Structure formats: C-alpha cells, structure tokens
Image (cartoon, rainbow, N blue to C red; front, side):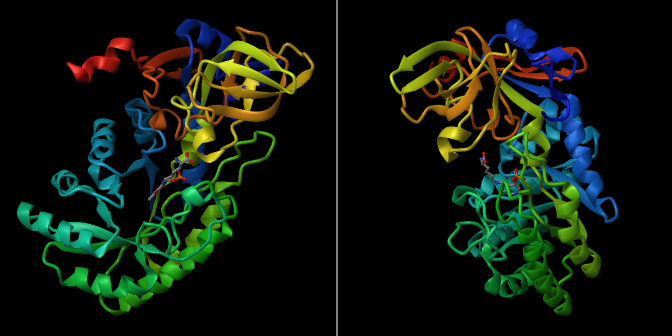
Length: 414
Ligand code: LLP
C-alpha cells in the first residue's frame, strides 16, 4: 500500500508486525506509526532539494508527538510551528531553535515573547498590526526579532476551500500589493529585522504548477526588495504538497515540487525553507479500529466501529477520503457500507458508500493515511479518552503516547 505499510497475503503489516497483533496488544482505537515510513517520506522529500541550501521544517501541526519530532530531528528536520505549545514540543524534541519558524494568523504577544526568548529562526508575520506587536515585544526584550512577512501570491491551489490559504478571501497573510510597503516599514522599525519572505498557498495540493506560479510571483517581490536594499535571505515556500490518500494512485514525486521552487531560489540566491507536514507523516500512520456492530437496513449497511470523528476528524470535517482495509482480508466478496463511529452525530462518518470485503463483528479495520492531522485533531468529544500513539520499528513497538483514561478526562475539573 505504502512504504512499510503493506499487505502480505491479505494481512496488513506495519513494518515487521501484523496490525492484528498490535491491535490485540494495545486494544483499539489506536494510532500506529512506522518509524521507517517517517524516515522514508522525509528523505524522499528532503533529498529532492539537495542541490540548494534548504531546511525542511516539518509542520508540527500535522503530527506533534515529541517522539515523532525527535525521529525527524535526527534526520535534520526543523519545525514549522503555530503556537508556543508547538515551539515547546519542537525544542523538547531536540530541534535547534535556529531551525524553527513560527507562523499563525493570531499570535498573542506572550507567544511572540516565548518565541523571541528562545531565539527561533524567524516569525512569519501575517498582518501590519502583528508587525507592530512584534516590534513592541522586541523592544520589551531588547531583542531584534527576525521576521518574514507572509504574502498572499493570489494563486488558486485547486484544493478543498477549507485548506486553500493563498487567496484574497482567506484570513491569512498580507496582500501581495501591500507587501513592499510593509517591508519598508519593517526595515525602519528598530526591533524587527526582515530576514525572510513566506508564502503558503494551501494544503493537499497535487497540481504542483500552482507552487511554481506562486514562487515566481514571490520572487518578483524579493527582487524588488533587494533593489530597495532590503536583504531578504530566507525564501519560505510553506508546505502543502499532497499525498495519495488512495494507495492505488501513485504519489506526486517531491522532485516535481522541487522543480517548481528551485529556479526561483537559485536566481535570488536565497536559502529555501520548506514546511511540509502531511507529506511526511500522513502515510506513515494508520488508525486501528474494531468493528463493533453491523447494522443492516433495507438499503444500507452500517459498520459501526470504535473510532469516531473525535479520534479522526478529517472525514467528518472535510468529507476527506481515507482508504480503509480489514487488517486480515478473509477473501470474502465485497459489500458497500457506511463505516461510522460511535459519536452521537449523524456526521460521524469515516467512509460513506465504501466497497469493502465483507467483515464480521469483532474484525479490526485500519484507516490509512492517518499519520497527519489525525491524532493532532483528536478531541474528547462525547467524553471519550483519546487513543494511544504507538511507534513501530522493525518488529518492536513503543507506546509514544499512552491511551487516555476516564480519570484523565476529569483531571482539570477538580
Ligand atoms: N505551513 C503553513 C503556514 C500551514 O498553514 C500549513 C498547514 C503547513 C505549512 C503544512 O501544510 P501541509 O504540508 O501539511 O499540507 N487539517 C487539515 C489541514 C490544515 C492545514 C493547515 N496548514 C487537513 O486535515 O487536511
């Protein structure tokens, strides 16, 4: 299916371990990751950019587990963060502050302070007011804040509207037309230092030409800035490269993204920063869930499983497709079913009208591509403890986050 997540004679393996064995050992629902898959996807991405100076800053929001971050840090990854919490996670994982960028449309002054105190690489500023706030915080600390402005290159990434970010109507970034003026302002400010430029046009983008278009537009801006003596050195092209949620389709090679971005940075003599999240983590993990009940209605069959929208929000939230396989395919004929969770909401659907090999109650199913925006978006809705995260390497397993307990749920209420 994917590197290190494979079917062998109809049985799902995570590296050298049958998924069934993992489910029996740790119960369900459970997030299960492959250490070597993270490495594989990181290297596939990172090596595509080897001919230019670059840092691959993993977007921590996709998978924030500190052990996952540690594993990526060992391969040289930096971190793209959006909160003090994420910066704290990245530093705890051993990522150098000089490889951490901080974005986000609504940073609080205390978060900006947190970031500046830790000497991170740069703050990606998203508005004029935020620029002023950063300047004030810099003054308070007596530290010049390295910043980039996040600009909207006005490119349509042709992805889901909820994850398109580079257009006028989105709340993110500053308008392309105003960028030069704001850079001039930043240059004159005493406590900010404009060292970079940032753009991020959206997520799950598979038509890489949008990246090239955006890079070209932003490069024009950088040339203008350079001509004004504003020495922008870091060209942060954001994240957003898509993955194949359907294992039958091949993934877009990262080389294709590299081809779109490299000419611009070469021409500008800038250092490239990249912020992939989904690409490196989505297909390194699965969510294992147990089929609790089969409900047959005249025109519909429901597979009711023990993982819900609180565990994996993407299908309910975006109508996202996640491929589902029984961890043991008993070679039965297929049937068309809705795979639904236990949450008291009609929208609690993991898959709608999906053709699956006929299963029995008690079977274990794997929801694939769950390594990105899976656990990080999980909640305690319906007072359900969040699942554990388990890291597989070869034939060994490690619980990198314990399953929450019912008493955890009330911990903050007493
Ligand atoms: N950089 C910035 C500034 C971002 O806003 C994001 C994602 C990334 C990098 C990483 O994007 P990626 O490489 O993972 O596509 N929860 C949604 C995705 C939201 C993405 C938000 N920003 C989902 O599950 O599809």
